[in-house]
Image (cartoon, rainbow, N blue to C red; front, side, top):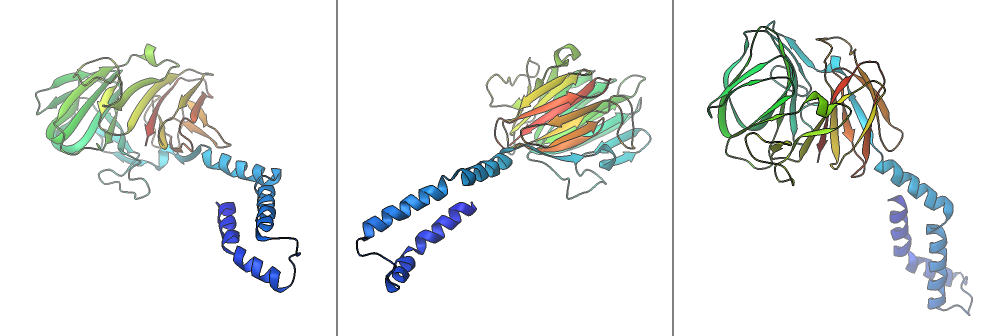
Length: 327
């Protein structure tokens, strides 16, 4: 950018240069305007294609196209312990409000919830948002105003497109605590017809492999049926991948959007303090890298479309990881 600006300034000042050279008799009589222009062109080519200049420009471009990370440590998330509910908020939610962590692209909420047996969220209403629940452990009972009643288990993904308005309840089913992630996205199209979707993705599918569990409804291969194979449809530029990454394993995930978000699920137990448990290192094109443990997340600035995020398991425990690809 600086080189381009300097070039434009010199072109604009050419008449001044010619006038000063003529006044001080610096132009030989054998030189006409055409020859001066050819000389100037030759000098400009030398300046533009000088190896040192070219190397500097490529280095700047390389920096602009590299992948960057901003850490979101687990203990800095919003947190509340209500007894029946232990919850963490990546973004502003309920009583936790933080303008620095309000949303990211179409991604608006990532809540990591633990609900005690025989308790839960009573019937309440939503509009516009598309809300999906990712089941980690235990069983979750879902009921809504569209007539859907379902018991969700480990590996299930349930997505409600609230659209013009729905009411639902979510409660712990059975005698054991339920651990799940509640994720909200804001659709590109308002006033959609409310819909309900469920998908199931086994641990075997996710073991050392990226499984696409949510994808834009308009993407090829995405089915808009209530129950189907493949990712649940969402009406925004958001794609969600999940993996169970074994100790010592590494996976790469090309990102097609301008940004992304990664979250390491807190699978080894509730921990409101500094993150522990499974440990991964993330890196990408460029020199930036970051180590994350359970509950930690990171904002990803992709740099160039198609840049690959590398996730490496550093510890001796399996890491359950979610990666959002966002425009």
